[in-house]
Amino acid sequence: VSRFNNLRIGFADLSLSILACTQYEESDNFTGEGPGQSKYMYSFSTEGSKGESLKLLKTALALLSRLVPQANSSIGTPHQTYSYGVQFAACLKGRNALNSLEKHLLAGATCASMTYSSVYDGSAGQSVSAVHDCAAEVTLNITSAVQLLSDAGAFCADLLSLLLDSEIYRTLISSPLFKASCKAWTTSVDGTDGNSRHRGYITRHVAATDKSSKPSSSVDP
Image (cartoon, rainbow, N blue to C red; front, top):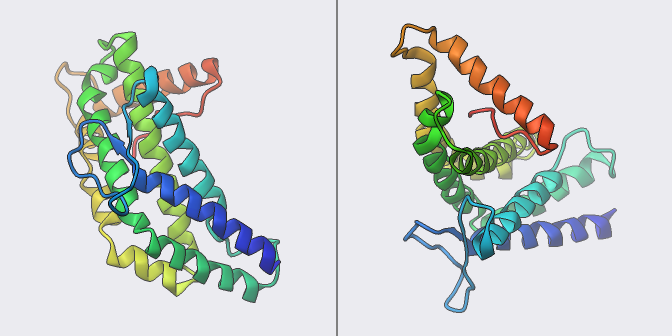
């Protein structure tokens, strides 16, 4: 089990390294690790090299979520699970991972909020909807990862301390997408109930996602 946990920490370090060296194309605040750190610029379009970098980011987020310690893990004893949690927290701290998550969360939420209104009222074209879906998917993936880390913090104080010392919860609450979706729930410009319109937005995107067999990106944080 110890050897397996070391292997998992190695993969976690790899995913965190990718998060640290990827950067949204419109960001001017790159936080790479050292003078020789490579940059992988991504956009929320699936075309070209920036689209490939976006796929790399999504893969890193998916891998990280799978590696987060779980209290009910069937791998090893509770003590070994706790020990893995401590190692995982040290890996997160060493890679400044929560700062990286905040950076990508803000990028995804900002982009999705800019396209939210047009997608919400059905006036967005196909390309705009595709960009919105990619940005919302990244935002959702990061939100899910933070939820898993929060659950792990219930039995690993090191992880809980990292979360509380970071700005990740503040970033979630104050994200532009969160504000845009809340406004859509409570504001109606044409006399239609805001909640009903929002449910229609969700239903349309879930149906479109099911049709294309892609992960849903329609649930707003």
